[in-house]
Length: 333
Image (tube, rainbow, N blue to C red; front, side):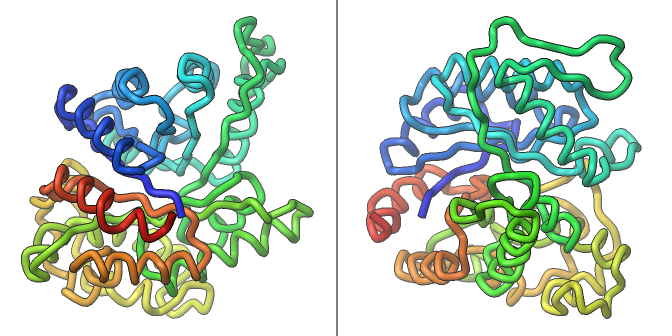
């Protein structure tokens, strides 16, 4: 099991440098940043900064999308960060939920997500690439042939199929072992059907973690199922609430959802939290004492999850990192 942390773009730069050093010492091997350039500061400047203060930790956006930057600009950023860090960059891509919708635009299609990954990875390798309507192909003379691992954020059946076929890993914004198994199995089955060797396919469960009093913990992380519900609502709209393609346990909790405020995306003061029950919070997050965390992550591991990634946005960040380093991560080494 790999362990990661994720920052939003409003974390203070000095504190981010401190936290990544602490996390690397504690045994975390990944650090991810939200990529939503209007809601938060640019993540790639923060990634470059944090790379300079770590030695082994890997970094990436969680997640970027195909439509917010020209593809050669995006690939140049990815390749530059990979080159200057000695290959410590991963690419995670989604359709562009908050990043695009906050501008009044629609997210990208899944076909475009897959093509974006293939074309930007090829540019980073140093290949000549054509895309869109550019009149001449693009080739980076400075590329050094890095192969960037790729991930796709997914919930719905088509997105999971795309992840299995077009990426090396899937990002699941949830820590419910049963659902994670359902998601991961679909990715693996799709990859195998496409003729891919799926033995090294990776599955990330990304969710908040919190220690101590259950009531305090639930209140601290209640923002997360609301953010997840925003994605699930899209799936329900596409497939229908009674579709056998999506588990009832995933869709039932959004039935009373009234809306979503993108200006408060992923924040505890989002006004649309009243439909979130305590059971949903406990199911989607990792809460309790260290033994509880270990037990749930073991269940995630059994379900096929290969990385537990903590959304480090709920308070007590230093303590969470330290306690994982002392009491949780050693159980998986």
